[in-house]
Amino acid sequence: MKSYSIALIPGDGIGRDVTGAAWSVLETAARYSGFALAGTEFPWSCKFYKETGRMMPDDGIETLRGFDAILLGAVGWPAEVPDSVSLHGLLLPIRKAFVQYANIRPHRLLPGVTGPLRAESFDILCIRENTEGEYSGAGGRVHQGTLDEVAVETSIFTRAGVERILRFGFEQARTRRGKLASVTKSNAQKYSMVFWDEITRKLAAEYSDVVVTSYHVDALAARMIMAPESLDVVVASNLFGDILTDIGAAIQGGLGYAASANINPDRSGPSMFEPVHGSAPDIAHLGIANPIATIWSGAMMLEHLGETAAAGRVMKAVEATTARGIGTTPGKDRTEAITAAVIAALT
Image 1 (cartoon, rainbow, N blue to C red):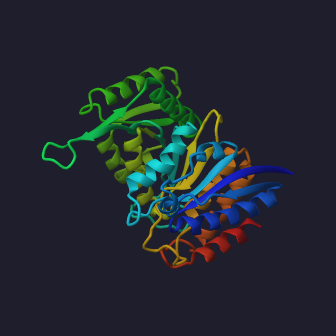
Image 2 (cartoon, rainbow, N blue to C red):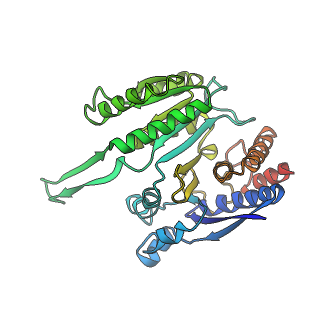
Image 3 (cartoon, helix red, strand yellow):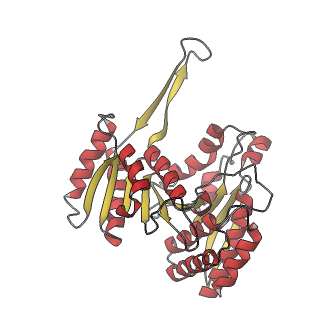
């Protein structure tokens, strides 16, 4: 029997609940589909940071390198550890070390879920650059604590980085409805975004079968609300993609349904799969966290591993569950009840 080694990082707050729920679903789907998942759990989290002074050990990256994939719950506990520490100590280093430059976030309404918009028939795939741009971490502060204090944050856009994420977006558009929306702000950012637009136009010549439209980020934000059905694949920089996908989560019914994949397309290192939502300390351990976003992320993991039939089985089970009204109202159904319903629908 084929087996895949999966690193499990439940993280903080509801991350532990939703990761456990998703893992139960994925193990069941694997068993029904004739393969196995071998999970190894790591306690890296804000609690780990308070105990050790690090979000993960010095050899954390090398430890993860040997796994086929990583499933992460949620990281962060702002009341205990600043987000700037938890993010830069765990999530961003993993994304960068394994060159997970494509962050994929699907946005569509599941059956039985009522979104806030009149539109229902949208299916948007957001592709976010994941390793550079506005989240490069280049910059610094001088004269701290004085009236002369200066903070500088430098965005880094490389030709290799921009071209590969745009090309990834074009390739995704080819497999879907053949439309690509490139997100820019070149009217205001005359260096980085003009550069982004130039590379978009260059690649468009290679993909004559894809209809390409460049949108200023503010205009695209409005379009996602006013006409989401007009969008297919959206490709954006790190910051723009981060913000726009929260809009995507909102129109699909909330963060409880927002899945994501951090992909290393050439598979030189493991890819990581996680829900978009945070650790939600206010409801941690109440047993009411919605695990669907993490289960959906797990289905994306199975697809990335090549187990497309199992991935489809998981998504059909999720859709059957929400169609029955289970997991469609925040706080109504307990985590374990939603998980049990999805597992029952797998059979």
